[in-house]
Image (cartoon, rainbow, N blue to C red; front, side, top):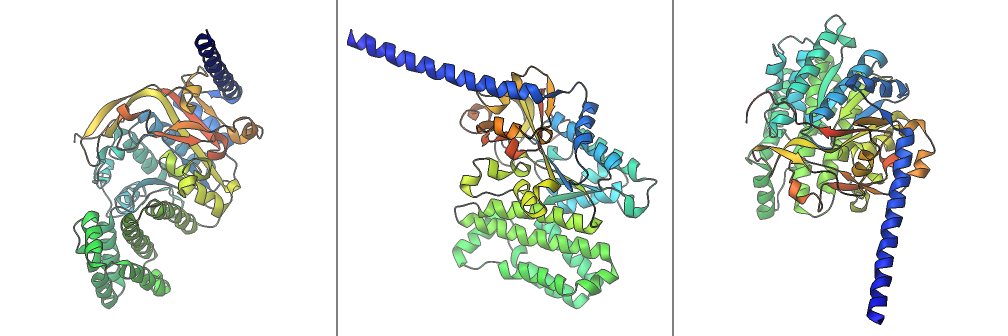
Length: 443
């Protein structure tokens, strides 16, 4: 009898906990439903663009995966609106600077640039190819070229990359431009870069450090110092070439730091890359002028303020946090994205074959699950317009995060980041069922 009584008590406790969780979920859903604005077509996203205040210098647009068509298409539509209607000057993507430079030459009608958008995107030749060589990006690139056609050079919108993985092309760019400025200094740069160029891969460089204790830190930093020392003279000679060389030198320097930091546990490797993202965006704002405004495309884990997630516990930073800290929260606008189910392109392992994967329904009680229960096929949440929402959505919720490496079978163990929604983003876009990107070629 006592055993039966104990079972009934335990069952009652579990039931009470379930009822409590359901009640909390419903309160969260009620708040989402109150503020959500339904999206019936991609152009409805212009309504979100209209609410972005003129004081916001950087608009950060996220994605819950690197292989979902709707994330790219909605970002493209919002970017077009901001460029055409609000005077934004550039789009900077989570891609390598040297490859994006060729796209920039194409959209700006630069002499010597690629002849077609397809040719321009071929310079994105580092895995994962589908991330930028797809129909969705091609259509945006063509739109930017058309937009720029009748505008003077100084008013044309640009396309850039904020990443630093393509260190070899970055170093080649620095050497080539330096040869046009000063042959003797170019030889010094070539000699400095031979330190890192001697290693055929990041893994080989890391192994060399482990074996010898020697690294290329001073050589990479020395090139940046040399460019800064000769900034005025070389800018007077060719300001565009100097800006390209300087950014490329920083990309190479950050790449070396990023690789070397993998020797120690901790957040440093991630943070070197995150800082490079922000520093690149900041240089672009400076280059375009004091009142310029720009757009950054990157994963949610990069653009949503890390301080509003469990990334903070690991001392990981991102561009969302750094931009708010350096520019001021009132000058930054972060838009998060997510989905409930669908299909996505990703690899099952790093540099693995592209896979078409089914996205499982979001796990119960997650942010993405609660958004699905709002009942719209798609909606946007303009949290910046509702001050009280920050007090209503304080509970951290798991928020879907699929990378270029993604295993749906591990959905409950990983692929979610605990998030306080209104602290992480200024606005949010949810699409219930999403589809895969449309790659331009087979892999």
